[in-house]
Structures are given as structure tokens and as C-alpha cells.
Length: 187
Image 1 (tube, rainbow, N blue to C red):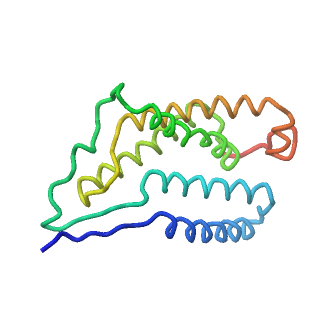
Image 2 (cartoon, rainbow, N blue to C red):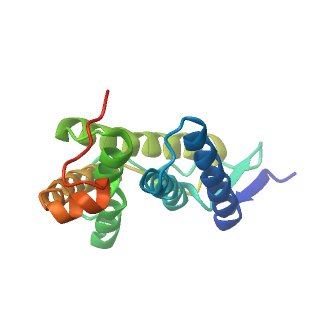
């Protein structure tokens, strides 16, 4: 008897989910009386960013379970930072979190450096823990790697610096927020 196997594909999951989330966010903003083109575009950018992160870190997902699935591939778990990580992977992981500071600021008014970096770190930590649990329980095909956690966090810091440099320009602030000054946000 073979172990059970299942594959979750990327595009057939992400594209319909993205469409559904776009419609739901439109309805949610309209119901709250907060619907504007800028706000809707900001929420949609956040939605597709989240889906891109999901796709890059989890999908396609190859799963296996049952008595004949074999032991977990623990070589996929890297808990000690290493300098031998491929540069390309490190850069791609940094790039994944570069937009996070801008999306947090535009959607939630979060502009504090420590808070943004903490959110980037926790987002990456959640991804790595999820990948670890999947490796150990359903033979997931991803890697749980502390180097990814480091590069994602560094990407968040770089993204924060870049975003705040962009926000120095009145033209960019006007384009993003509709005025030269950033709107006041509560909470």
C-alpha cells in the first residue's frame, strides 16, 4: 500500500482566490463607506502581494502521508545560518519583503521602523514555521531555513528605508496619498 499523495497547484488556486478577494475587498470598502480608487488599489495591491508571497513560499505544494510515505526529509530543515546560501536565493528572499513597508504604511498607517521590521520578521517566521511543520507532518516539499528568515528581515529593512526616502518627495506623496501631506491615521 502506497502513502497518500496530493499536489496543490499554484495558479489554479491563486488566480480564483485573488479574484474572490478583490470582489470581497471592494464590497467591504463600499459597505464601510471607505470606497475610493486609491484605497481600493491599495487593498488590491496588498491582496496580490499576499497571494504572491503565498505562491512563492508554499505553492505548488506536494504532500504525502500515511504509513508508506517514509520519514520526513529533515535535510530540508536548516536551523543554523550559513554563508554558503546561494546569493540568488538570498536576493530573491530580500526582494520578496521589499514592498512590505509601503503596503503596511498605505493600508494600515504603520510607519514606525521597529514595528515594520517586527512585522516583516514575524511574517517570515510564520512562513518558516509553517514550512517546518509541513515537512515534519505531510512531507512538504519546501525548506525551513533560518537564512530565509534573515534575508526576509533584511529585505524589510531595505524596503522601509527605500519607502521613507520616496516619501520625502512631495510628488510621490501626492501620487500615493492624494495630497502633499500624508493623511492622519488613527491607531
